[in-house]
Image: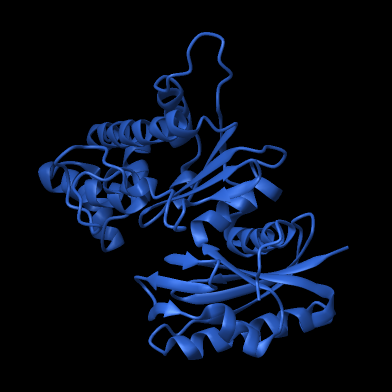
Length: 325
């Protein structure tokens, strides 16, 4: 049995785990990122955490085939660099070299959303398929594309940014510089913003009281108010699922994956979101008569997706003969 280490680098926490060749997570450890520090300090801690999690699993470093790293931002796997990350002090960071100063194993790097998609493809909702797309609805809209069992991210590893495809021409300003991006209408933070706007425009709505009680808007409150019979909230959720369905249909039309996986905290709402999302989405792609249809499934890997996906990405790179040294 071959083993791999997956490292999930986040702005708040660094998580690492030992994963077997089938994608089973054997154990994991976590430390705080302390993102205010230098990139050298953060990367050193990533390497040390890899050593610690191997020992904690009862393994030797010699038992591990490779280390995979999932990070926010744009990586350069060929050169072993994290080119840029908006939420971390990284600019052309020599991540492979600095990790290997701590633990001498092949090191591979990819975007965290791509790693989440790999986790779902190997061990989660898209297990057993060759072609899948995973969309994560959070602060933004993350996306990862798997084609023939491998991550697709373009020639520069900066592709699959579906969150920054325009859904509404001339629409809401996005942090990326464009207007009307998908994530400005379909992310969890977008739904929270729309809930606040609806409450401001409709002071008699239950939304206003719920937001005041909560101390601010969030995506869940829109569903809570709808379940309580609030018509304003029901209209808001209907509008939100329309935007979401349009974006998901665009993803299907682009890649025609066997499975489209959707995840993120907003999916915890269950049927009030999932039923209209599926119905609307599947009525919009261009399948054509007799064409097999994409299946929409909920993400299954949860908080372990980054670790497992990073490890399995490392395995795939090693299997493909890519240089991780």
